Each structure stands twice: as structure tokens, then as C-alpha cells.
Image (cartoon, rainbow, N blue to C red):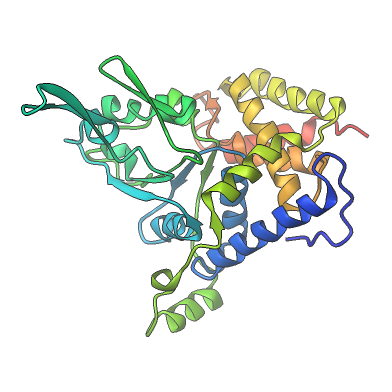
Length: 327
């Protein structure tokens, strides 16, 4: 990550931005002590969090998805709760339920685990669509409605969900509307050989996640999240963003292109990326990075002759490359 020794800031003020980036650096370093060799994944996760988005970690078992989620939550001085999604999990197990109090002759609301700052939804695709959809209101509107009463959630509020893409027995694929609520879908991948050897050596006698401590408070994170929209973005880059979105909607191999919500998430992610890099203004590279990271789960590919092996990871870079960069 870039330092900010020579950053010139108009919107936030140089001193304030230096303070924010210093905290982001500490957050990044703290997480990387636990999640070794995955700097780009950690960066994408932090930028998503700074942008106020939610993260879907999709990969095979044992590559560190839950470890990353725990490292993020452990680095924030806030409340963390975990839900193990199963086929018998009910929506009320997430949101909470009204319980009758006989002594008071009234119903009392017992809050569910969604009332937290960081919520880990482990193996989210093992729950039924009805239960999965119970998170939609919380992720989009930051409140929960139970029996006609709306309860606000604490801020910051971050959902980190994991799923295994290869073991499909007893799972329910996430609906497209649910996928669209996640700002990013990240994959951990395997470590390089030398890093995996180092990881095994380091963890023979010690488990770093057990020693992790918070380096940022919820109020500080919330303050940074509120500062992200002040990062400057030019009208040319707004047009550049729309051109990328439009290109995804007319591509020969894409059935459903990126939504307007995806465009809003691209802008938020690009602004947070600029702040992560120590800038108060968005560059075309921030938009490109946002497109490659935010759009890979928001398009539906046409399935036909010659398309079977295509993935969003193949098409999004192609779309970005074909759209002219503003100068």
C-alpha cells in the first residue's frame, strides 16, 4: 500500500486523510499477520468494508475463508457473531423473535445474531432460499422488520458470507437478487509453495488468530466509511463507469448485464480504493479495479455452443479493455 507522505487533499483535509490512511495501514497489517500471502484478497476485503459493502467468500474448504473473516472481525473493536447456515435454519434464527412474557403479559423482542457489527454467515448456501432472503433487508437497508416492527441495526454493519462452490449436495444456490447485495465476491486460492511452507512452520507452535487484537474502533471505521463518499470523482469517470456497465449489457455472451446497483457499488468501491491508496481523488485505474472486483458475480452468461467454459472472470477484463479510458 502506498504511503501518504506527499498526498495533497482538498475534500478531507491533508491531516485528516493522513489519520485515516494510518488507521487503514494498521488494519491491513494486522489482518496480514493472520492471512499470509493473500495481500490482494485482504486489500479487496478492506476496500469493500471501507465502502460499506458486504463480502461473499467463495472457495474450496480449507483455504482460509473463515480465517479471513475472523481476522477482520478481530481487528475491529466491535461485536462479532457467527451463524452456521444449515437446511433447518429459520429466518427467525437470524433476525430474532417475539416471545410472550407471562409476568408482564406482553411480547418481548429477542434480537437475533444479525444485531452485531460483523456477521459471519458460514456456508450460506446450505440454508433454504427463505432463510437466505431474511438477510436481504439487513444488507440493503440496515434494519430488520419483525411482526411489522422495524428495528435498526448497529453501524458499521458488515456481512461476510462463505460458500463452497464444488460441494453442491444439500445446498441451495444463492438467488441472483441475493448475490447482487454483496459488493464483492472474493476467492482465496491456494498459497504459493514457499508461502505454504512458511505458513506451516509458523503455525506448528502458534496460531496467529488467537493473538489478534483490535486496531480500530467501530466509531473510527464508521467515520472513515462516511468520509469515502467525499473522495472526488470527475464526470468523465462517471461516464467511463456507465460505459463499462453498458458494455456488459450488450455483450454477445452475456444474458444479463450489470445492474445500476452494481454501478453505485463500483463508484463506492473506487472511492474507497483511492483512499486506501492515499488519494482523495479517483483515477481510471480505480474504476478498472472496481469493475474487475465488483462485477464478477453480477452478470449472467448465455449458455450455448462455445460458451460452456466462459466465466465472468474471462469476460469482465475483456469488457474493461474494450472501453476507452478517458484522458
